[in-house]
Each structure stands twice: as C-alpha cells, then as structure tokens.
Image 1: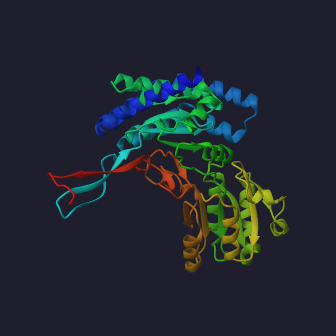
Image 2: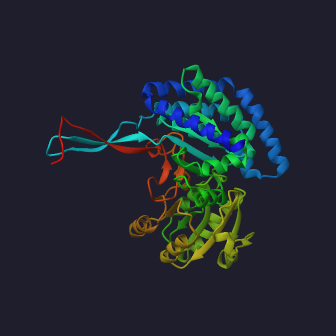
Image 3: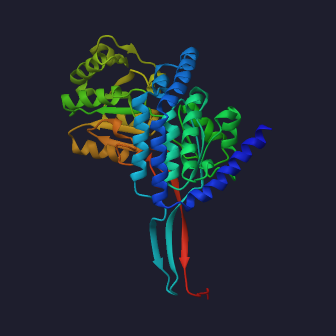
Length: 417
C-alpha cells in the first residue's frame, strides 16, 4: 500500500536523523567529500539520465527557462561536486553557542544550535537542488527527504542513488538521504502532511508550487518566494551604472529568481535613461513591456498590461514603467513585489537610505545588481533557497538556517526554591 510504504520511508529517515545528529564535523565533511567524488565518478550515468528528462521535457513543452534549469552536462555535474566540497569546508553550525548565562544559584545555561531532524524539500525541474539540499542537510546534521518532481525524475533518482551509495561506503545510514519521487504526487502530499516525521519543509519553484505547499502543509514550512524583482533608476542615476546594472540584473541568467523583472524610471530621468537602458536591453535580446511613456521614448516596446507589473517572467522579458517620484516607485514595489530582491541606482544618499529603510524585501541593494542575492555570493556555499518570509529565516538560507536551538543547563545539585 502506497501510504504505508511512504510512512516506512519517513520512519527510516527519522531513525537516520538521529545518527546524522551524532556525526562529528569531520565525519560530515568526509561524507560530503565522498558524495562529491561519487558525483564525478558517475557523471556519465547522471548525464544519460538527465538526457531522458530533457527529451521528455521538450516533448511536453515545458519551456526554455525550465529546460535550462533542468539541464546537466559534465561541467554542471563537476560544479555540483565542487559545491558539495565547498559545503564540506564551511563551519559546522551544530553546537554553536548562540547565547548563555549563569544563574545566581550557579546553573550554567547555554542556547546551542541543533539539527532540525528531518528536512523535507519539494521543488521542480532542478536536479542541482537535489544535491544542494542533501549536502546542506547533511552538513547541518539533518536527514533529507526530497521530492524533485516528474520533470527531473530520472536525474533525481540517479543522483539520490549515487549519494546514498557514497554514504553507505562510509558506514553512514543511507536513509539519511531519501526521495519520494517514485511515489509521484502521493509523495508530495505525504511530505506536506508528514507531521511527526518531517520537521520542516522547504518548497522551491514556481509561485503556484510555493503557494500550494504553504497553504496545504501541516508541517512547518520555510517559504521561499518567487522573484518579481525591481530595479529603480533614480533621477541621479549615472548613465553607465543604470545601463550596466539593469542589463546584468536581467540578462546574466534570466531564468532564476533573482533576475530583474521590472524597471521603474523616475520621470525626471526618463528622457535620458529610457532610451539608453531600453536599447541596451533590446540589444541583449530583451523584450520590453512598457507603459505609454516608455513606448513614446523607445521603439519596439510591447504595451504593458496590469498583469505585467506582477509577472515573474524568468525569460528575456522585462516590464518598464515611468513613475513620478521615489514615493511612487516605493508604492509600486509595495503593491507588486514578491519581497525577494530590489535595487536602486542613485547617487542621492537620502534616496538611497530611504530605499534601504522602506523597501520590505529579503534583500535590498543600492547601486548593484540584483543577481547577488545568492548563497554562493554571500559566502554560504550552496543554498537551500531564498526565504521571503520573516520568521526563522529571511534571504539566502545556508547552514545555520537548517538548525534550530535548544537550551542546555549544567548544574551541581541545584533545586528551585
């Protein structure tokens, strides 16, 4: 029976999580090194499985952005191995003392970081996430149960098998890394309702997937949001900064959640910046969905609709709007943003500080590309995701975000009077 089989897998993960929590930092590093070596040794097998997924994806018309995220080649497999080794080299958060004190009676109290236990993840068409989350979970002393979706089924099954074999080779319980992909949608539903087995669930993918997980789960969820990301071009924005930051934010890798989807240009700078930045975007292959003012200043603009302001394109498309003031730009962001990442290009210190203080997003920048919202760029190594919620974790999530805390007290016979 499917439900019984899934529950047994969850029970195995729960048992394995106790062993994972006891692993020393050195043991965890060695395990991750073994996984990295196994990924490289099995590169041809992984790429062959991935080719099956790519062929199926093309037949199902999943779109170029998802195909790009889905694709693995020798260089990307090698990059996964390198990222796993980087996670192995990161400081182990388990046991870190967050704060502590000594009571008047001599009892010593410490709040320390501890693993969650079993980390679940639901994601789409991203085989790299299979390795990233497994590596981060293991380094932080957790077991992982993964649901990577039907689009990457062949790739994920092989990747999980390779990682499990690497753990077994070191005498570590292979059930520390599990997948429920073979159970299809039933596996995803079980993860969302696996309270008592799954300690925390992380969704990564489209806005609809994240919304489904957040609204359906009885398991605590760390929400990773979609990226309707904004670039604001202030009246004082220098030409070269405005052009280069906007083009990089949009085109460096358009299929990811920290790529820019909307550009807001202050009206005082519109005649100067709309043609300059717009042409640079178009020369890079970007289609601009603009309002009437943008269309009057730039050829080849697609008329923007209300939906464009709220769209995460993940393609070479961008919405562009002229606003009267910084207040209007802030109101637009507050209305349409997914609270992921926003940046302003300005030399006005007061406007820069207002933007940083008033924009309610996980990452807010002045005079730099939105593409820096990334665990690797922040020095976290591979990331679990980018949290857009406000509880527990916000922004790129690394190892500390996969831990909870507990209080440890050490006494010498004290009793409460």
